[in-house]
Amino acid sequence: MSQAELPSGWTLSHTDREVFSLPGAKVVTWAAAAAGGAGEAALAVVASDDESDAVRAVGECISGRLMQTDGWALPVPRLASHGVADTRFVLYGDRDAAVEDALADVDGSLPAGWTLYDSDREKYRLVSATVAVWVVSAVGPGGAAAMAMAIGEAAALRQLGRTLRGELHVTRRWAPILDVGAGTLRS
Image 1 (spheres, rainbow, N blue to C red):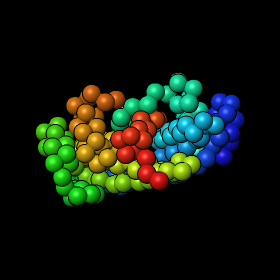
Image 2 (cartoon, rainbow, N blue to C red):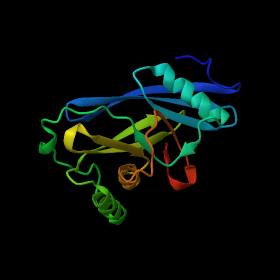
Image 3 (cartoon, rainbow, N blue to C red):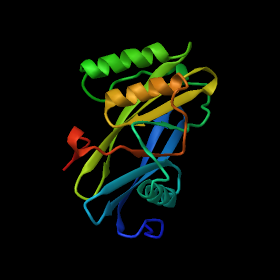
Image 4 (cartoon, rainbow, N blue to C red):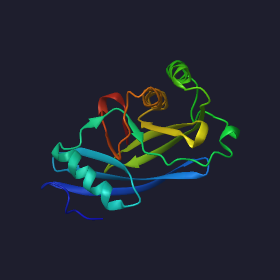
């Protein structure tokens, strides 16, 4: 881990690598968390095999060059078309009203021939708390796929719907909005 990309007064606290699966493919992500002297926290996640990309991204988040947003459309590789039709989607968490509404939204956004593929949850550590993020994906004909990440399973489903409708554009990096009052962070 390198401190060089962080502004003065900030300390790199953690990095974490997570791999998300698609039929016959993987999406590698790195997250970096940093703490400021006044109790501030920042987190950035990148789609990259290189840990240093995440450290640079969290530095950009702290300095305001990477804006925090409520969701992320991850870049995904083109899939081999075999095996895609055999997918079976299962929610990661419990069904509640928010998840049911979001599931209906994303179902209505699926292009012809597309199906939901996976829902997964990961936790990224900050200095004294964790941030739980969900990733949901969908696959389509001809090796097409889409993947979105957000805080909360319902939010991730909504972000996938936005991605499929072309409202959320694919980027290589993301800084989630960290809202202590809304329960984003857990001790």
